[in-house]
Length: 207
Ligand code: GRF
Image (cartoon, rainbow, N blue to C red; front, side, top):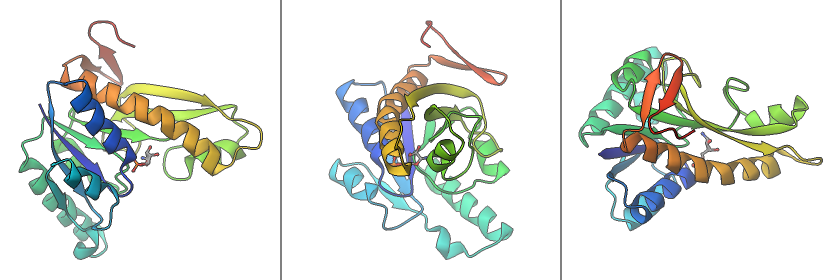
């Protein structure tokens, strides 16, 4: 299976997936890492591991709905050049059009740093702390047209500790992301995931 990973920055989740794919010998290869930012830190890691990289810079497309549609069309063209079976959003910070998400329906995953459906959007850890939540976490889900929605594949929970701030809680959650996201991607490439309405079933009984 061909996996294309989309990043916007540091790319630590991408790195965890690349390493697990090699170490666990998945029936898959990372066909490309694509960024919407030319300065994304993760691009260097991918290049140093011999993975093809590409940049589709959203800033070159301007602003507004037409620009967003044109960016998504170009991104889709570049992604599809790598014949992906799965597209993995790993810290990819762009809102995607319905045309784009529809094209990859059932074959695009995202990780979001909250326990969805709580705290969609940005600043999830800050909002969890301000809401007095005693637990926080991250969610891997299939991507649908609605931002941070879509069938949930996996969730990881961590405690919110007294004195936590965005950085300390974010770090605790990120450690779990690095464990959970590779597992979820592996389930997909092994054919273990089946979307059933709003839910995801794991063939073979994983949970
Ligand atoms: C992660 O917290 C992820 O959940 C969110 O953006 C962050 C990306 O980090 N969507 P990285 O680029 O994978 O290091």
